[in-house]
Image 1 (tube, rainbow, N blue to C red):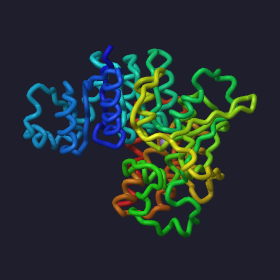
Image 2 (cartoon, rainbow, N blue to C red; image 1 turned 45 degrees about the vertical axis):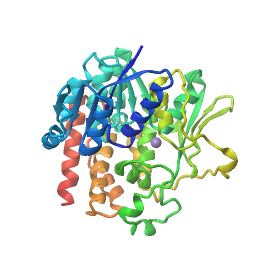
Image 3 (cartoon, helix red, strand yellow; image 1 turned 120 degrees about the vertical axis):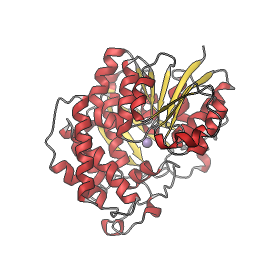
Length: 386
Ligand code: MN3
């Protein structure tokens, strides 16, 4: 049976890799068909994708690019939707099996929720979904019998380590982090780093937002929260370990002392493929790991005094409720301000901390609370930093 797949954010790093994975799978006997694709601004790349994969529906998040796209003449048999608001309807349809959600940020939440409500498999790269609404997502999963499979490499690693295991046997999760480009820096050194330096990640080639998050270690903080909800783990049983080589993608320690690790070259195509084909595995020609040439594997304790964002993420999930929503919203805006050279690198954690300190927590939230708090926090940060 052909798998029918929709991708949100198809021109980004994960979206592009997903289409490569799908091409490979089609040549290996796992047949896939692209039902829909969505894109924000990279219209040139999007045109090529539409031409090659011929989805029946496309979404342009940015309505102002509609004319530019239509001029390509690719649209005769294609249904075109515009704006984020249409995603809800699109992912509720019964003409597809798997949603690959590679949107960046809070906007990814509602499509994930809707697809899960409709019993789909969601291959999730949008970690913000679980950061802001983990409790709501898990309740929805329980009711609908849908599947949520992580694409994030660390979570795919943990997911693979846990396959065939019992939940009560887990002692702790060892979440690995490369440490980013500023590993070993002091706060003084961090205060002077530039956007260009922050965008130079040593191991992974990713979009701008997640690359800055990796430099501040907020990415690891978001991943701690993501892991808590995905695997139903007490946050005190999640340990972050700096592992600069990014060969081990994460580990699980069991109660008998056994530790399982998942390893491989740092290439997102592997976790993407697994999220599509799980529980089966298929061959591919992607580069394979060579341990002899990998050199030594190192492990260090993260410096949470210097990298405040990681500490703030731990604090916000320990306090629970809507704190992680504030953490995420303030971070999204602060990263944007940094990328636009409006604030310095250390201001990112400063801004987030200020928002968390003034937040009045809501413990049993609904979706509407999250939307309101997200918007309020964004406006707050923007108005203070214009
Ligand atoms: Mn990751």
